[in-house]
Image (tube, rainbow, N blue to C red):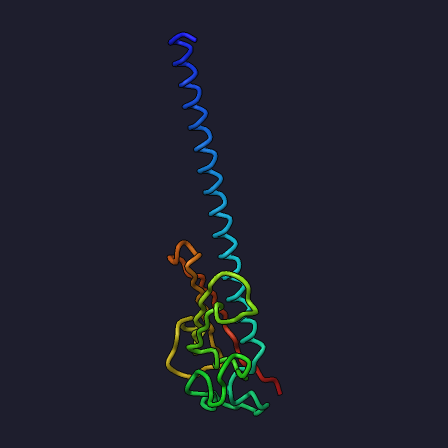
Length: 170
């Protein structure tokens, strides 16, 4: 083999090496994007599950026992867990989820990534603002934030919220 053929062979090997490196880099990037998307779907599913679980409960502690609420002033002033409610299984009304947080690592029934979720419940007046209001209303909003080190290396947060309204027809 002469010098010209040797140079062409070396150039071909370098070109082949560059192609292989680029294919591997693209494959790893696609795999990383697919994994991150999977974790975002799992985080959204977890947040939605918590919201739907909260919606399955009574609107307020006053309505949990089937009591009639005639006025907004009869609704709970303090939102959060009541005495004796140690975990989610014990919650009996919507606002018990206020300031509730949990990590999926502590739950052996959830076999997935490490997620931490935090819940906030507050009164809202949809005619004024969807943000928290200081007075009691027939509308409460739950906000669930889910974080994980697997969501863009801990930089992203999945946040879902939903408004629950109390209606009583006579």
